[in-house]
Each structure stands twice: as structure tokens, then as C-alpha cells.
Length: 112
Ligand code: 5GP
Ligand code: ZN
Image 1 (tube, rainbow, N blue to C red):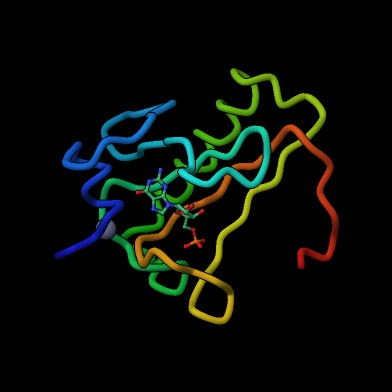
Image 2 (spheres, rainbow, N blue to C red):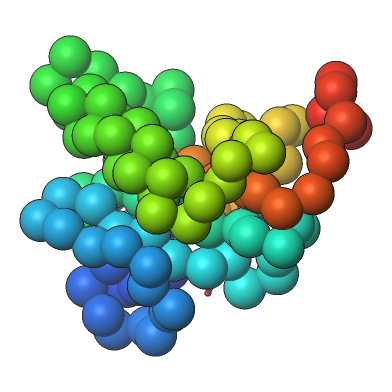
């Protein structure tokens, strides 16, 4: 399968990784939308939030543990935003589930 985030997860394509364990990897976004912009992904290919099931959801819970750890390690004391785009109309461009972890500026709501 020609999936760019699978390739980042297995090291075929370089990325600036800020966290990695057996099931999850986090790396800096190529086009940061905030002073800190990290993508957190499962190593396993799950195409989107619409494909989360009872069988594969454990890694999604783990992703949120990793996000909490990163928020502390990187001192996101003022707050942070977690974003998941699911499907074309939501702006999902890479079809491997990923969570944007953004911090370091003020965010507006509702998101544009
Ligand atoms: P989406 O639009 O699917 O929610 O987010 C995809 C994100 O992946 C975008 O923010 C884009 O900048 C980032 N991205 C796309 N290709 C690469 C890449 O090869 N390396 C890195 N580090 N980020 C990428
Ligand atoms: Zn993939």
C-alpha cells in the first residue's frame, strides 16, 4: 500500500520524530500551523476515524495518553488543540488516521 504515514512509521520516509513506541509515532508536521504542530499516528494503518472499531480502538486510547505526555513534556501549559480531520469535506488529505497536536498560539473557535 502506498501510504506516506505507513512509510514514516516504518522509517522509509524521514520525519522529525518527537515520540515513538511499539504502536505509536509522533512527528513534526511538514507545514506547521502553529509554533508546535505534531502529528500523532498509530503504526498500524487505520484509514480514518470512521474506521475505528472495537478491535483497533486500543491504540486510539493510547494516542491520547501519548498526547497528554507530550503536552507535559513540551510544557503546553497554556493549552493545546487536538484535531482529527475525517473524510474529504473535513480536509483529510492523508488517509492514515492522525491527530494534529497544536500549541503555542491562541486558537479560534469554531475552527474555520
Ligand atoms: P490532514 O490534512 O490529512 O488532516 O493532515 C495531513 C497533514 O500531514 C498536513 O498537516 C500535512 O502538512 C502533513 N504532511 C503531509 N505529508 C507529510 C510528510 O511527508 N511529512 C510530514 N512530516 N508531514 C506531512
Ligand atoms: Zn498508512
